[in-house]
Length: 390
Image (cartoon, rainbow, N blue to C red; front, side, top):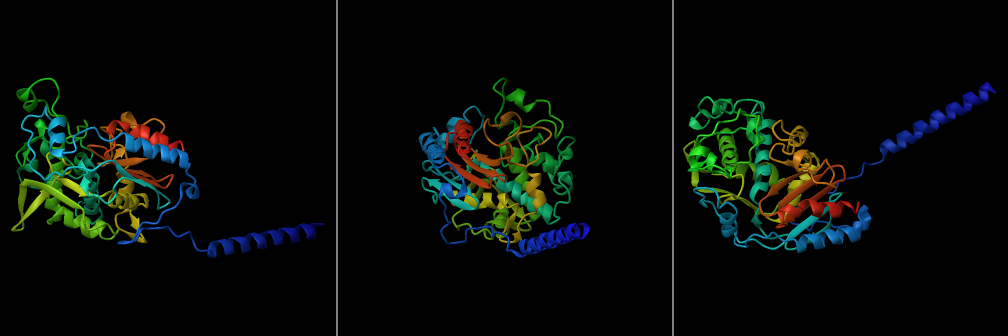
């Protein structure tokens, strides 16, 4: 009896070992990546486990809820920021297109609407690209630590003074620096000022300790871009192109602009310091498909066809809620904290810009969603409809 039991145990061990050996030698499922200058492959919603009815409903919702601002984005900017003193457009703008978008599941396009090849302004979604350039500087050791003080890297007057000298890269990337000053003719206090008070009150306000209070402010984001230019010593669009956009096979149509006032001397050459949005013009101009490729890179933890373009550590870092504001990471929005969207997975994070320009990343469900010119207040409802179909 005991010999029989031993025999069956031995057979069981041998069978398990053989099974594990065969399983381990099977090729791993190859991840799909779209190739440059070739059509992005598609799959039907049913093939990837998505309810086609809810998907159609979400697309119809996006088309029916177009951004309500003017098609002429110069007018839209002036109308939206009319309470700002000295608002002046000093970077390029462009008439926008209509609603557009694309949804990627498991790397494949399962839905798209509108003109996905049209290049449009993307406003503050640019910030997530700027954050990526910062991540590359960390990866390369140009910036040793996000908690380093910026004045140790940028020693001109930009970060001089008792307050500004305390600012770290982490403070800049989480929009909690409360940097005080004027850059390229734009005053920090004039960007989205409070509804109460006036110019004297705004100029002479009490400064918050860096890292303690979140405040969305494009002048301070542009200070971040300027500081990174001083670190890289070459145009940031060139860094982005060489390290990210070319390797992932984006088109040649995207552009990243600064202002007519933001040209600076870098090692004897005039270089434009780019802006982190289109608040006063400029920023990233890009099509929907290129946005989706950028999103796919982050979905794949910075890896593109086996090459690590940006570290996994940075991809994780941008998703960490800041101490000052739980809905914001390193210039990426998080579906956590006070701005969380009901009925939408809490793990998603997204780039977001004026007018409803969004790049949504869901690593748990292997999904990328890009929207263009969706009424900003409708993003949560749009995503809720889509996720009801998973």
